[in-house]
Image (cartoon, rainbow, N blue to C red; front, side, top):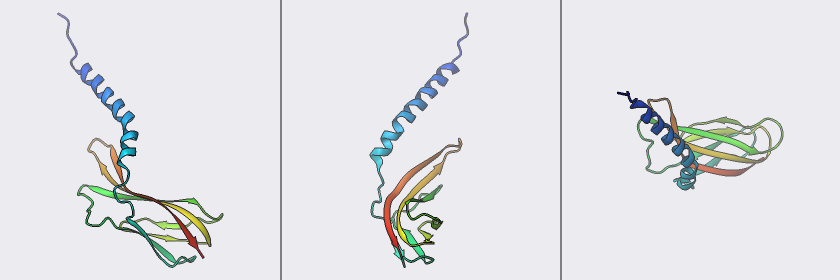
Length: 135
């Protein structure tokens, strides 16, 4: 009588599920979009050396227990030289610009959850690009 390894079938199924989830993840992400468009406001004096606040207002939405926020603020374009200082935070992030000019900034607020298996999932809540004129 030949012994059959029942675990080999589970391994193949796990690999197949992993491949299918990785293949469909980009398409699912494109369909989801960001549920809170217009939830970002820029406040403060638009002058070098002065703090400018990026405020994320998600209304009555609360970040679920067991998850946390991730703020990513990037300069897409701006004057040559020192980049703005960014202190990320939720619901407010602080930016300080060190020289005048036109800055194109990308603001991303995501909800992050981690599984007990070591993976993490980031769901974008706000994703906006803004042009800021700094004097």
